[in-house]
Length: 248
Ligand code: FES
Image 1 (cartoon, helix red, strand yellow):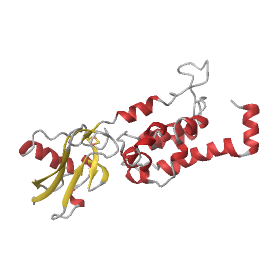
Image 2 (cartoon, helix red, strand yellow):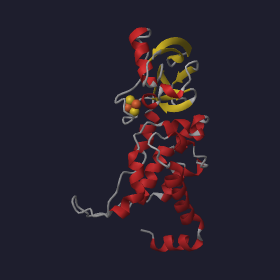
Image 3 (cartoon, protein in one colour):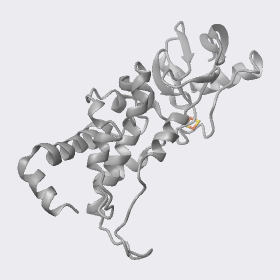
Image 4 (cartoon, helix red, strand yellow):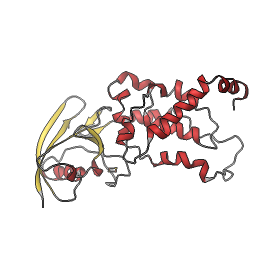
């Protein structure tokens, strides 16, 4: 059975905006993105929303539902009571373009700052040999759909615009960790994690892990191990000496 739901949606652009109220029909089994589409079809044809797969795999429909970073296509209406007002706002950490669409180019800039996978010199295509056990740990990180909800919720940048320049954010610190754990990658990752990507600013509150739609344990499995590797290099005197003498 359908029912009438109350929605409050942020409408506006780079100059100004605010919350607008709508009443819209909800049918059984629907998700928030269905309701946004119904609004576009019936009441607000110019409502801007970014989406693509409607299957939780493209990472496009990221926004905030009742203040929580969420994929609109994976947020079931059945998680709200029928008399609850559902508020949908754009991701707060990134500049608004229009309505629910934000400019996430910050993330692409951070991605470009990370040195790409660097195999040993002279290793030709087809000569890569790894065992499953070698990639077991980093394989989890490949599930990332780049929805940027972890980047949105991370308080290091969410409330501190001034940190954006020096902090890659959880998604890209996880990428650095993934490459550092890769058995064939020979690039120096530990110094740059600290000096260029701002690993030290992460204080492991696990907000990123809480919002990850792929349930990747970003903090426990990527950021904390990376911090330990950096600490080993810089603060263990024997490792420090060994690194000075035999650094790869
Ligand atoms: Fe692709 Fe939601 S539309 S993740």
